[in-house]
Image (cartoon, rainbow, N blue to C red; front, side, top):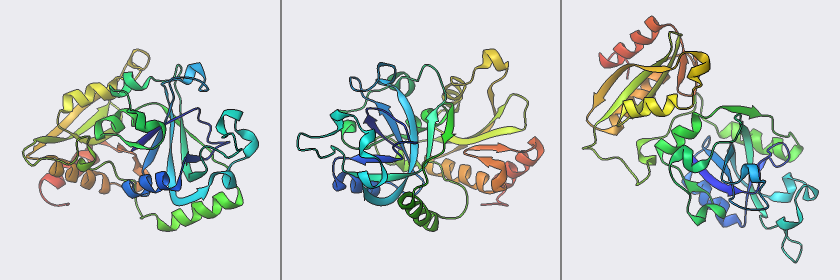
Length: 285
């Protein structure tokens, strides 16, 4: 997952991630894979609306082709500040949004309060990396998927990305995507399973601190209204993060795709425990 600062976010009008040059687009493509997401965060000052300044606004999945921004968005939709004195758009090159989500929370969540740090100035002009922990915190925020426009150029590019897409569910971030780079073989880690209340809804993941991760997940659950929250169902300790991540992925791959939503599984507890125990017994890999 990556992030960039913007003046606003409306994927129905601007179904793209636009940048100041093709090189900046290619910089993001080089670091990313199909299905990765780009988070939009409001800048700290005008022309960003005061209610959106410094706030997490939403995120997109983006395609693998660099396009001319004005081929997929209307020039008339941009404010005057978006243009140079010579009339050229400040962000002439773009990546097309294949899917888009908006924050479903009021007020909008503050970036620093959510991930615990402010972005560097680089995020104003380019996409910056998020750590595994930061991405997980953002993915836990209430979101609603937004329909993106279906113009001829947009649909052509999206069909191309569908042909490139691997079969099966989206994969979570690898240990190597952590801030600081890479995993260390000496770092113990756990694969965990959480259950939401007493419901047949489970969350699978990995962490170097499952109890802290549980607190992060529950921070975004209105437990005072629902009268229930996530709890740790079981954990398994591994000698390094790579093994914990491997178990997480194998567990999720063992369930029918229609039962999977992100890292969550809608299935009976008996079925869930069977898959978990089968992995530890070496029946599934």
